[in-house]
Image (cartoon, rainbow, N blue to C red; front, side, top):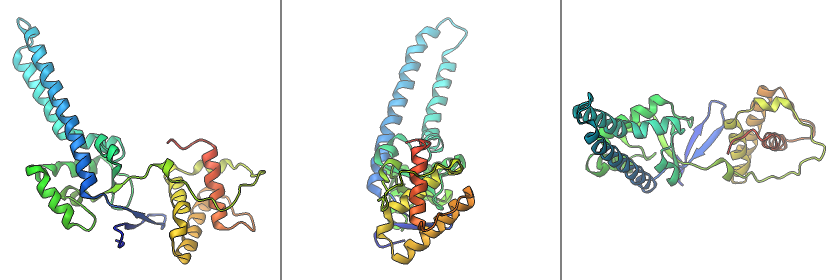
Length: 253
């Protein structure tokens, strides 16, 4: 944990990333927006049930069945809304997306369905009394965790969209730069890792900057089989890689 509130995480590629944990304000905003959506869903389900009931008179489908289906749908919305969105939207609900926050693993990796479900099952404890328990837990935690985050091993961070990570290019691209098909092996996450470093490198300690560039370059070289062309530096190599992957139009924004 850094003085500015950032969390330092070392990825499996041995690259250090700095993530900013989301505070209680942004999380409360997301919760309010998601709660509004949930309430709208509840109202729609109830109104549909009321509208369908008269049409069921004289039908083999009894009013009890309509009521049972409505209750099941309400139950699914209450227990499944957050877990389903976080599992399918890579750690975000509509409210979190608007608030600019995201749930990730403590390792910085995307969460799985299991983590999404387990952290949201704890809402039964975090949630009562206007999320008082969850709010107290967030305020006492150095990483702004509620009980569900402790159970699932997750953290909520401020999400920076990929298109906002604009690297500070130091070197002009060569007009005759070759195109390497091996770069298709680079994943979106690895490209984001490279561009995050290029964007923040001026703020890093010189030795940290050199070591990080070397580790990233070695990671890309191992994966693609490419090598730096003398007298190209590690940072020039990473800029070339990032430019070419971007130019191929493979990254989805």
